[in-house]
Length: 244
Ligand code: URA
Image 1 (cartoon, rainbow, N blue to C red):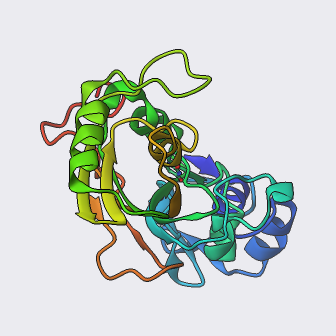
Image 2 (cartoon, protein in one colour):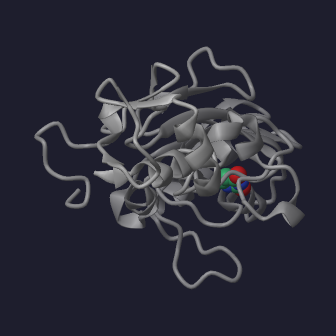
């Protein structure tokens, strides 16, 4: 049970001080009865706002097709961010919606967003080894012989990038066309895809993430998102998210 003013403010409906007026206006009901006041305690599932259930009161997990030009940081000085694509009420939620890992401003594709911090920690932890697949467009041709050499090196788990203390984990490289390659990583180091190609003398001129684990973008166009079930990443045997 939570105070009504806190519940409404945390879900982005209004500020705690505005909640009193809103409740006084009769717009909020609890189990079918007009709410008494901001301090009334209620289960989120029992609350209606203008006759509608609360908007995702238990949390949000979203799959977004990130367009180019937006950052995943909340720091406004870093430029326009992906959160501006979301409904304004979601932008006011507390806890805030944040990305699970990051894509660079110049990278498009699949990014997950959530307000569940334990999910962020779990899915970004290197020990979890979630495969993330990228499609890279190269500035110059990569021959199949050279691609095979690079694939062996990337898979070996021995590639050291400049300024790094440990080698990159084993990654899978597939050549699609002379200037198109897919790279699947299980970790997420800074600019990792671009730096792995650069270490082999190849510049990446466009980068797009197509998959995160088993998820792909489906029919989503840049800027579109869809809501995933909160338990999407929970093991089927019912083990807790914290355990996995
Ligand atoms: N690797 C990169 O270089 N950039 C990204 O955005 C993601 C992975």
